[in-house]
Length: 215
Image (cartoon, rainbow, N blue to C red; front, side, top):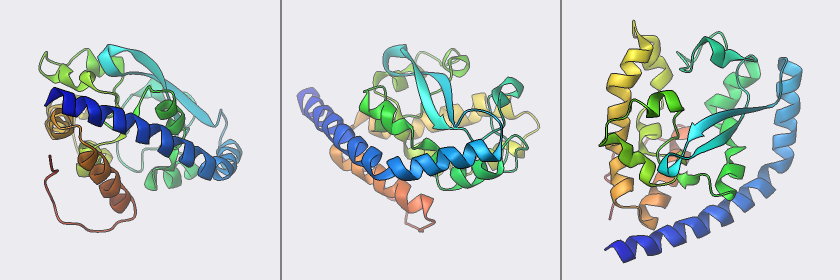
């Protein structure tokens, strides 16, 4: 079984490289226009960099298109609601269609991330993981995962909480890790492409039945 999953890991990395190269080629020109729109819309760089924790606890610089005002993270690491006042006009559009994640294709190409895997957290929250929860650090973090699909309305949920940070730590983090255990325990190509396909459907608002991932 372990050797089988190692083979899947090799193939997943192969597709990560191929898909990231294709994605960078296809979105290079649109990315240039996005960067210009961000700079025109608000002060600050087009690319937002943040230190996240990856596989085996290694730190890396996560890349995203900036969707908030400059230095927004100084007033909190959690985005609360889709109308968070720190989100820019262009940023709201990018977030809606997940276009802010495009620079992470570079993270994938470099091997710091995969297309599919638990979303990488900042050190503050990783330091709060229980020994059992640290299993999410056993595989590369991803651009998308089952938790991102299930909790696509996470910002709105947090906006309704009296203490968003506490709710995120005590409720959402454990729930998302439980969802991610399916792929962590069965990192197969079938699950890999199932999650990518489900993410695309979610972005474009296509309703789908809740199906279990397959071995």
